Amino acid sequence: MKGSKAAKAGEGLKAMEVIFCGNSLYLSSLASSLQKAKELRVRLLEQTLQEAGEELKMLNPDVLIFEAVESYALPDLFAADAAQTLLIAVRPQSDTLDVLCGERRFSTSVDELLAIIKSLL
Image (cartoon, rainbow, N blue to C red; front, side, top):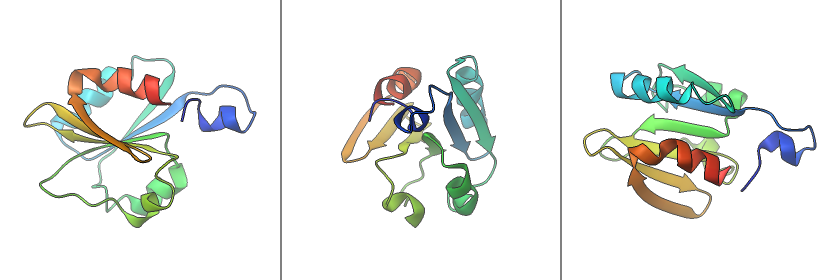
């Protein structure tokens, strides 16, 4: 899954589209810290993952970051195209991330967020 969608299409390199979905202070803080990386274009949508479903489909992000709740379900629009979007569920209570990248799923520290994005895309 290395390389951006644009690089695969032969358009040259472009900034990776990173979208945060939610309105918590925790997510806002993470988004702010990633905005310093010039190779990323970071947006913050204040809707829940389910509320933003259609907008997310139009935006087609490279990375989608959202706050995990006890049990979260990904909208159907990511089921078919999960290999194209890096999904990261943030768990603020434990400062951990659940990373879903195609068939790969793992957990890591929130401190690894930028490194995860750069290494998997």
